Image (cartoon, rainbow, N blue to C red; front, side, top):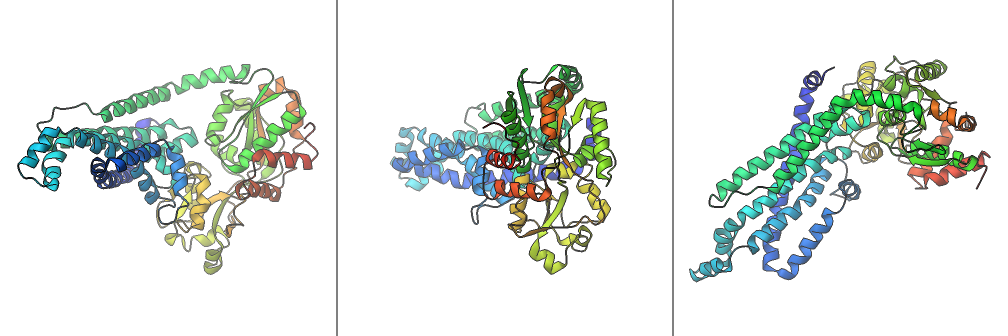
Length: 532
């Protein structure tokens, strides 16, 4: 499908996400102005208070946006999942330019003009409203323009906590390695930044017609965004050439790994990191090879592309995921047949090797609160169809887009949810469910937090989901160079049951133990850690 056709197909969602994004930015900027301008005035009147205010606002600017969202989530009243938390974070980030612009603009008013006003008998309030603020307005507007442009960009990250907006497309695109999705989010965001800067510039000139027109720093930022988009578009157009090059280069050995180096990757959730650490620790303890860890990568497609490009040597994948998402084949409930198919097709198409399965099936699972399950009689996914029109869902980005994800599930079970599923980072879905911000989520059957949070999984009674048996996938060239690695990893075959994987996930998620410690304990218990 061409990019214009792709845009036409998603046009309704593009408009909806753009509206969500605009609302987040508009509300946060309005709140930042309402808070920041009085604080800026106060800072000029109370110098001892002004310096600490500016210092605190400056320190907050140094906090990474994702970290700030994480800090806010557990806070009562202010935090949580969704638009409210996103707006609070955006207001915090927008305060410094608004506060700094107000402070600098008022300080820049000539003292002689203020004295002249006093000589005419003006009160301090009249001086502020009729003299100082109008003269300071160009500098204040420059600060607001910078805040607006910055907020458009930061608001894209709000999609990670289920706040919606254009960032939803960007996170989907990263998870699916789909430049079209990334552009669906990035292009409207860049256009919004440019339009916001231009409109605020018009307002500035109308409110202060005598002021000399200035080039806003916001326009510089917008120009940078547009340049970045041009680069993204170029990458999109050159992707086939790049794939051909890396496909040829992949046969000669991978990315940063040298002759004695193995690069191991993982997706971005606890189970994957633990499994990656088990592979890495086993190889380190049993061979002389150096292991490079590349964990917490964006998702299935990121890991697969990295493997093909030679940037990874191996990672753990799931058979059903490979069948549906990578091979785009019809689902099957025969675990043995699925494993044979993905093993043969990966070898034929990609020169990749599926090693022996680890022993557990980590299927997708629809999860609800146990009290809801008891009260409404929810035991199977088909039961959900009776209450779906009153239920709110929270799903990860891959589950929304994948062939074995939400669309197929909804068709198979006739699900018609109350509203469009809220998309968010996988690390937040269970918290959102437990805090009643959503009513059903798509998790994994081996997730360790399901029981501790009082949640239950619904039976896939129509057998929609294929088997998802976990197994290491490696580049054939890597195994040819290091045959001992394949033999070593085959010793893991069948050693990890679903219950054991769930316990290891619980140790990571709830007990906050390090993945390395969990891996060492597992390998020691199995007698596989041969060296200290």
